[in-house]
Length: 269
Image (cartoon, rainbow, N blue to C red):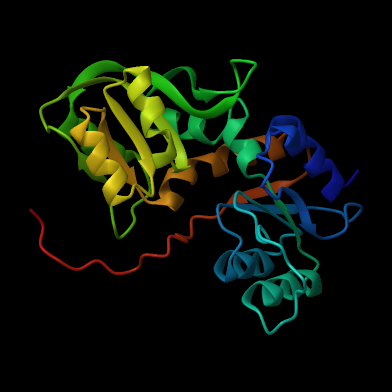
């Protein structure tokens, strides 16, 4: 029996309950018919032109994305807007779109679990737990053995997909790193939580100049800065495995780098 969009959604909702999403978020089915049959599903971080075209060309009937397409208030989806064109492209091509965002961040396992696993951490608890103490944003874990901060930054860079900006480290290169906090996506709002947790390093994305500078002045954990896309891409395989449990569905994880930074210029230190 052929699976439907609704069957895949049910599996994703069980893994990433929508009640875990932040109040401002927009998760769930964006476009498409829940009753439509599904044979192929593309999983990606960003629902953008490149990934939508990849799905259409591959013959997918469903895109599962981490980031919402229509996060802000929308009053129309005309083709005179970039997002409207994407909606029309998917509808005309019979491709549904489903998004699991902050609910996937907080679920166990979730986005930060995938990031932690990729860089070799044994996870012990959330960085910013919900009331249940189990779910929440970010994760705290330990390396199998201590390494220098310089070596840790190198290992993180090798474990994640390459981007033009690369991976940055802020802190003493010789600092001993054993306990680590991670948060997929923009994470400088959790700098204080990482400091309070007493970890040696904190790995996250979209770190800004002033919060980082103030954090280091206060002797907080060493910081590893990633691009947003690279920090969340490991989740795609986790979500793909959830979908594979549905049954007769072929799943592809998009390897297209949808990080917006495409050129890097300057001198290596």
